[in-house]
Image (cartoon, rainbow, N blue to C red; front, side, top):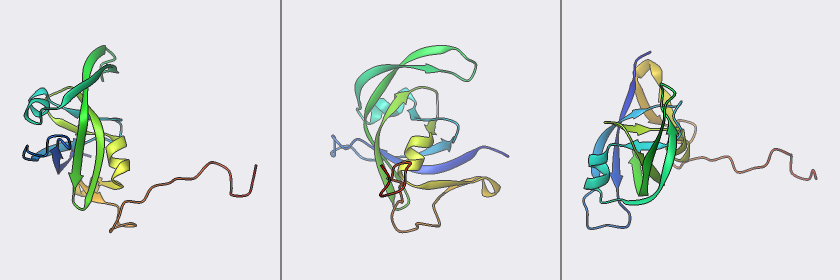
Length: 134
């Protein structure tokens, strides 16, 4: 299986005067967060909210800026999140993909809106026990 890429639009919801930024993003269901290169954070004039420690693929730990808020759009979906400034490509992790109810299509090497909920994102918002149980 090859890498999965998709076109997303990033914007700063606090700075509506700035143009949205269309970018090519690598989708990685093994990653958790949205990661953006430094030049994207600068273009969107994102604010550093805090610093976060991340474990890289090679096992090394690194402290990186966590910027936000940032709006991510794909097709008829959007989410609001923070982003770690890390790497040289936009990395779309599991949290923003789940929030927008996106699925990966490995055979097509693409990202898509969940076909089971094509019009609006579907989320699970229930507890682990059945209704009526203590």
